[in-house]
Amino acid sequence: MKWTNLRDISLFISAIIFGSMAALNYFDKGRSISVHNVNNAKIQAVLQEGIKYCGIGYYSSLFDIKDHLTNTGSKKATMIEQYGWLPIIGKGWKVAPTKTFNKNWSKSISIDDKLSLDFIHSFKDTKPVYYPSIKAIEHIPLINQLLKRSDVNPRSASVVVVKENSNIIYANILSNTDPKNQKCENQKGYKILQKTANFIKDLL
Image 1: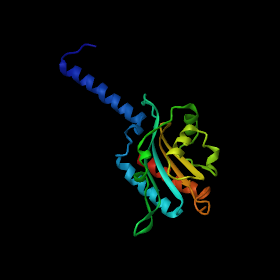
Image 2: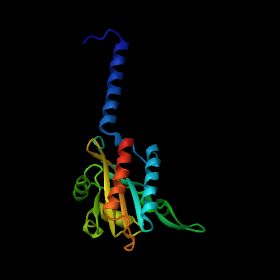
Image 3: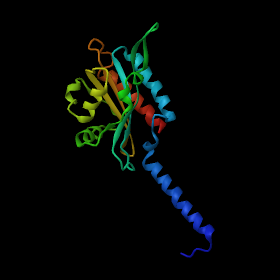
Image 4: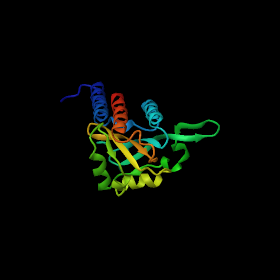
């Protein structure tokens, strides 16, 4: 190919740069997700609705999963927010963000070990899985770290992930700490997480 002038060269280089950016955006939409993403506020509103319905003892946690095609660094899970019923002075029990009261949630969690990676990749896109007992999965390093960092003691949990081009970018966990409140166990919890996952999927 013969270049006639600098303008042709500049246009060629620009085409390569913008083409590469477009390709990265297509294969890795999840890379831009962070605690400042505008979509997260919309998702959090849906999480709050679910917790209001489920009642005291339930918590809904939203995580950003760094597990993308273009992510060459360590794979991590970072909590975006968690909602639960909290006793507010002068107002009684209210649905509120709990991450503010737990500094540990600000730290990301490594998911580089094979057991944790196999676990999260076992989930199908937007299809929740119910665990009637946390003991069944507490041996998984990722789950073990989550439990250690949590200020609550969940007895059961429902989990759903949202994928983009086979890469997990969001995880939503609905957990229950109250054995007397079974309102959102199994199928009820499934429907709530399914609604949230579909909502997230539509935002991508």
